[in-house]
Length: 137
Image (cartoon, rainbow, N blue to C red; front, side, top):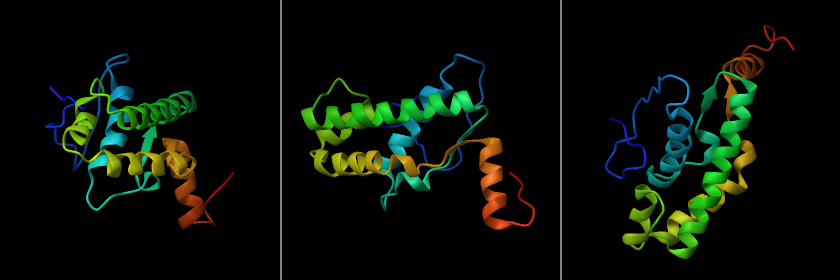
């Protein structure tokens, strides 16, 4: 079973989340984004993590949940709150709060640059950028 909140669960490589409605896909995605921001070396920025979902409503929800999760992570790191998810707790236990906090703050500041789109929106953006003669509005 995939436990995205466990510090021991590997997250690099390809990740495909496929499941029925209400089984935690959005939960997994919002935590995957934070873990990538915290754990990738060299560090990556939020504008380098592509998140694609099906509907505009799902995109809005996902954006809201990722932003809220960033804010919760910042608060937990500031306060040294060990009731947070295991992957954040690691940074507190290992004395790496400052670097983790900096990454979370930078991600929150740049959040509006995050490529969180519908599949249609992402494809349209790629056509506009890479094949302007084929793109339509």
